[in-house]
Length: 103
Image (cartoon, rainbow, N blue to C red; front, side, top):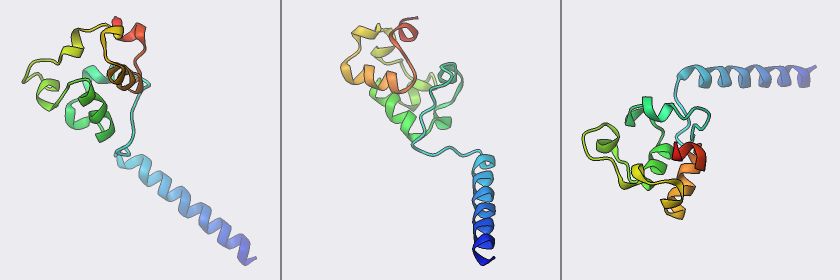
């Protein structure tokens, strides 16, 4: 009986923790969202996770350029195969493919 109660209690605590994380609105700092490329056109720099900011920095972006307060980096005018290997890897981790990058 005690074992069943402990398992039930553990399940309830786990569910409560998951619900709290889901409703807190905070993303894990290591999260990189790749499901909707339009996010990159809509989100402010401060809305990006540290992991996402790091990938965009590889592509030459910083807060000022992202927010339109400084010139866009050279990567913005390059086609996929004009990007360095490191830049292509970063773009890929952000959800881009050759086709979507070259659009």
